[in-house]
Length: 402
Image 1: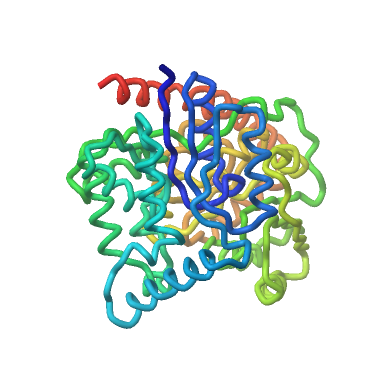
Image 2 (image 1 turned 135 degrees about the vertical axis):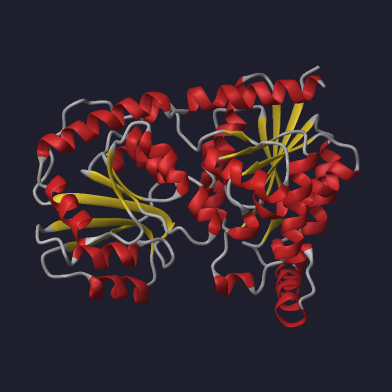
């Protein structure tokens, strides 16, 4: 009989490529895959369906849909707001604060009767500990360190202690746990005295790699950064401030949703020799080709909150898999990814004048840029989903056969 895997998440698949990659890898290996999630936007849900259209044994089971007006969607919004209000005002922590439809998630997960559950993101980690108490096989994917992945203003409405307890239970009692870097795995072990999580890098399939070996770098050099949202806490302001010390004119291209106030704030920071361009979000399957249009990728990251320090931004992997050299911020996680191939230039969190001068010299040296591009292409042969998916399939096979 075909074994069934249930992946539990709380965001749209088009916003979580890691879930999509795992689901497709499992389906291709012969498993039935149910993804329990919800709908925030009807348009995004169509992109979710598009992402799995060629995988007939993957189904999406919807817990909530707040894109429509209904009694359920009203109640879901109200209960989530109430959960966050209780934390902010009374310090009373509840799972309701972690997302919509929390009670229905539990019932639907039980009804799925899967041979193995894989829990992604905050709420699913909490839910997975409840499923463990039912004697089910439950594994956890620590895409981030959830209790340490929030800016200070967001922590006031999050059940931090509840998340820490869930993380400890998951790491110590889960069927298996995976995370995104060796740096993150080691830190989680140190904090929770747990067994070592396995590491599956947040990489992408090789067919997305743009592998032309020679590239003509433009003048001015075009720097590229992307995210779902262009906003504070990502290192953009610090990088733009640093650019004031670089006399060579550069183009900075940012892709993602951005508020008018924040875009104006960034423009006001930029010195006159540089240009800033904003790009609208595009479909995930077009991102690699979009990235390849530019010269250098920016894998900027702050070292706070702690989760940011220990994970490796998926931007780093997408840049090298599109053949771009990378300017990367120095964090524990990104050091791990960068040092093996050195496909670009690494900036400290507080760059010195000498380091900024070295960066400008590097940007003006096309031979060094081409060498960094070649190393990026070499890195892409190592950092790819074909390699990483084998780890996942081995873990799942062992878990189900226990």
